[in-house]
Length: 325
Image (cartoon, rainbow, N blue to C red; front, side, top):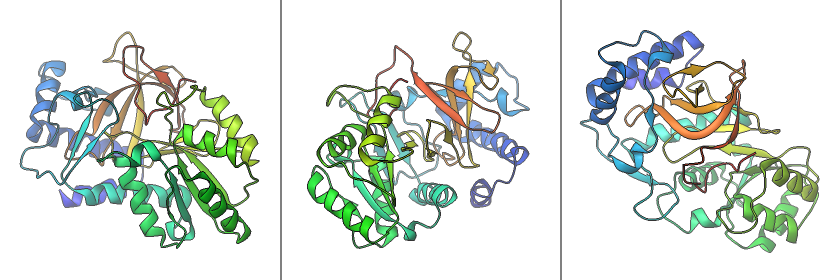
C-alpha cells in the first residue's frame, strides 16, 4: 500500500482522484469488515464503476463499531468531544499518514510552517486526552521551531502580550482558537493585527451564547481589525483538514473531496450549488474508512470549494463543528 499512499498525496487531477477512490473501495471491500458488510447491503451485488456509485458509511458507525482494516495495528485512538460512551473513536494504524496529511495541507494553503509562529488557544481540547486537533496543532507548534510557539490555555493576558511582541517584530503568526476562547480574548484584549491569522476551529459547547458563524467572525474582525477570519474544518473521523481564508468558503487538499447527498434520498448525490448532507472522501483514511456520510449540511461549488450550512436536527452537536449559519 506504500505506493498508493504516495499516489494519494501526489494526486494531480480529478481522473487520478477517481481512479484511486475505486482502488481504495476494492481494498476496503477486501479488508474492512464493517464497511464491506454495509456496502454489500447498499450495492446488492453491483460493482461501482464511478466515484458517485461508491457507498458512504454513516459517521455514526464510528461510535458503535471498530472501524479499521483487518491486519492493521492500532497506533493511536482519537476520540471526539462529548460524553463518555457517546464519543466517536478513530482507530489510527499509522500516525505518519496523519502527519503527512496535515503537513502537506498546511504547506499547500499557508506555506512553510517554519515561517510562522504557531499559537494555540484550545482550552477545552487541551484539557482532554486523545484529541486529533490537539495532536495536529502540537505537531505544527514543534515543527515551527519558533521560541514563542505554544499552547496558552486560558492565559489571555500572556497570549495578548505574546501576540503584541510578535506583531512588533513583523513575525507571521497563526493563532488556532476555539470560538468561545477567541471571543474572550477579543473582549478582554482587542488589538490591531497585521501579521497574525486568526484560525477559528469552531465550538462554543455551551460555554456562552452561541453565535451564528457570520456574527462570530464579525465580532472577531472588529476586535482585531482584520478583513477576514480563517477557519479550519476537520473532525475526529477524518485525517485531512479543509481551510477557509474568509467568507466561510472552504477548500480541501487534492486527496479530499466533498459531495452533497439528497436529504430525502441519502444514496443519491446532487450537483453543485444544491444544499444537502455532506459526504466526504478522505483518501488519507486508507486504513479506517475513506468514504463517510457526515451529519453536516453543506453546499459545493464547481471549483471544489464548499460551505457548511449547519447540522441535521437529529444529530448531536460536537465541539469541533461549525455553528449553524
